[in-house]
Length: 292
Image 1 (tube, rainbow, N blue to C red):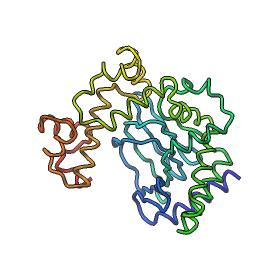
Image 2 (cartoon, helix red, strand yellow):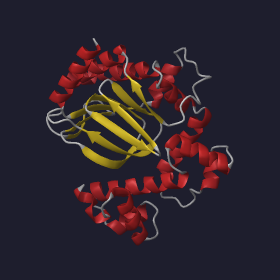
Image 3 (tube, one colour):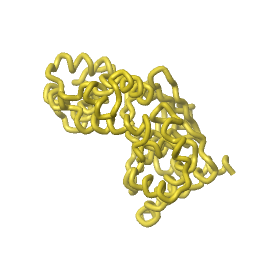
Image 4 (cartoon, rainbow, N blue to C red):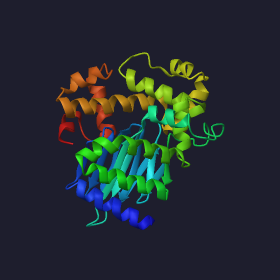
């Protein structure tokens, strides 16, 4: 049955993604991805998301850890994470994936009704994301979700309940524990999640020093620094810098911002320093970002 469901997922994704790229769908928070060729590691900012891989292989490089996932598996991301990601594609078999944004409201509502081992949840996973095998029930939910996307009316009527069902299936799996920790704002993950959310909102502000962020997390500076690196794979300063550079990339690529203007808007005082750090992170200059 697992193989049948995997085949159904691949067939549906091929029909919904006629060419390489990322595709928004009729269901808010649901994105489809296809790659026809292997891609080298590239920096990404991944918001809390459930990424289901239908075909191919993807690898995430987080600190000194490599997280590999493939057909029948998913990547569950509980907090906004900076990492590099590459894609491995076999000739004639494109990488196909479904990404569903984690809805904290749905998770909170389901947690209130489910009998979950909450006492164990906060510290079970050190990282803010985990690779997990998909259960038969989860695969069947994904198949029905993809089938609904083929019809605008089905997507409109059935989509919300299928998204809720997918969240339920994920919460019932081992990877559901990190989602519980974040939503409940418990333990190390919950504290680091709050800080990451603050950084995502206030990345351009000048008061994002480690001491003040540690105070917000109710930790000593040294404990906060270690916990932050355990969860995100990078130091708080590296995370802030990566967030600013990712947002600048979006401004240049999406709004045709001038390089100096983008640098200023994300919190850089020096355009030359911004350009150096941008090139170091992405491998090309800010002026070339619009072509990537």
